[in-house]
Every structure is written in structure tokens, then in C-alpha cells.
Length: 135
Ligand SMILES: [Zn+2]
Ligand SMILES: [Zn+2]
Image (cartoon, rainbow, N blue to C red; front, top):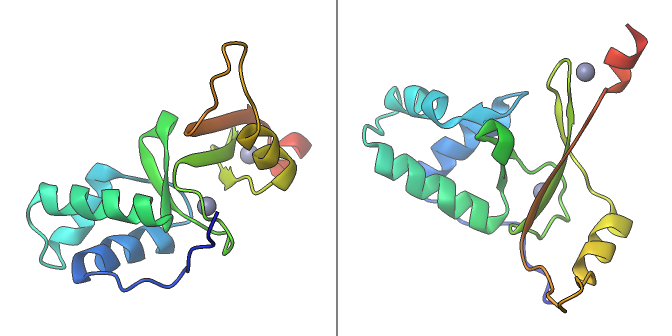
């Protein structure tokens, strides 16, 4: 697979949406993004959704399905937009992107009984983060 470049020219809307997500320390819900972009002049929700879709395709952000929220990709060598894995703390709800080669290699070569290979997955693992384990 060709290695994709991480630097893209984002459109103005994409950049605004991306900045909001990147600055946040936790996953950002769509309505919160909508609320924040209004101040920057993006008034129509479809513009925001289009920007989100594009950012996901580029791998700049990922969607955390169970939270219906978006996080900026923290790993510079993450080329996956169709395959994501997160660990989520059950207490503080901290979401961390899992960048584990063993896991992604396993899943990339994984075939189920019918011989189906998976092109897309969104994994979420739940447990306790270090901080919450202590308390
Ligand atoms: Zn990523
Ligand atoms: Zn925690």
C-alpha cells in the first residue's frame, strides 16, 4: 500500500472544523462543532458534515462511533481512515487512539470462516485508564 502524505491542503471550512477538534482534549460531538463554527461564519450544518466526512477520509480525524464524536488523529503515521481502534475509560471516558502494529497487522490479515476479509473496522475497547485504576 502506498504511503499517503500527511500534509494536505485543507479548505477553509475543513481547517476550521479540524482546529476545533484538534484543540479539544476530548472527543467532540457534532452539535458542539456546529455551535463553535457558527462564530467563524459557517452557518449551514451540511457544510460541517461535508468537512467532517472529508477529514475522516483524509485520516486527519476519526469518529468514535459509540460516542458519536470526533477526535483528531494523534499518530503521525496513521494512514487508516477505515480502520480505527480506541481504548475508552469507563469512568473518566478518556479516549485514546490505539496505534498498535500487532493489532493492525493481525486485523489486516484476518479472515473469517467464510473467507471474508475486513476492509473496515471501528474498534472500541473499554476498561480503566491508569488514573482511574488508582482511585
Ligand atoms: Zn489515527
Ligand atoms: Zn479514566
